[in-house]
Length: 212
Image (cartoon, rainbow, N blue to C red; front, side, top):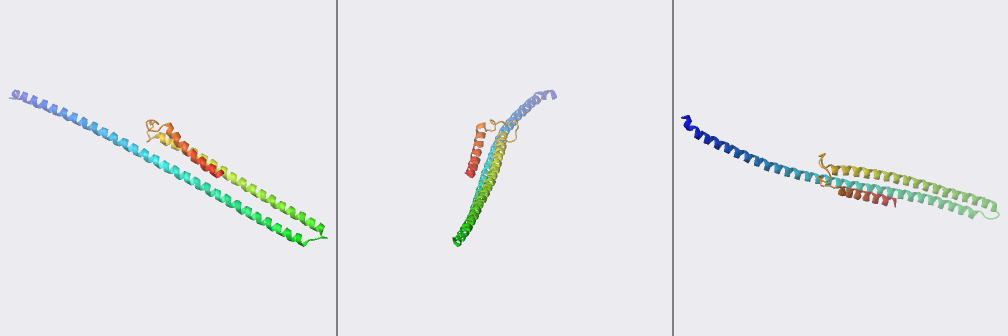
């Protein structure tokens, strides 16, 4: 009868509930293990991404410094070449004027003293004008050179400050998590200051080398 089957039904129900409870515990344990593994993989991915970012910015920084040094070297070579050409040209003009003067003086003898004195005065005036023109052109070239150097120095300082600000923000920002701090990102103020100091030193050395 149904009444006689109640103990068996109760036993089967109890076994079923126990089996379901065990399955639920096994499922929870598996979910916990999977969650821990997912967190570990996420942490590994974050560390790898952060290393790639730092490597990329290190490479960009090296390329920027190398390009800046090349620009400084090219400018220095062009300015030196221009100075040599100008000095050579003015030297030739002065030498030619002196040769002409010597030839004219050779042809003029006494009793042409008055004419000789006038010619000597004219030639001295001409030489003085040549010297004055040389001094003015050299001064103009020096001012242009100084202006170009000052402009490059300002540009270099602006680039350095922009790079420092951008790098500091990216390093402290982490992977985009607004709650990330320098400590949780693994980067402290000391490390950020170290990168700023390295960039400033290299830029200053390049500028000082150009000025010298």
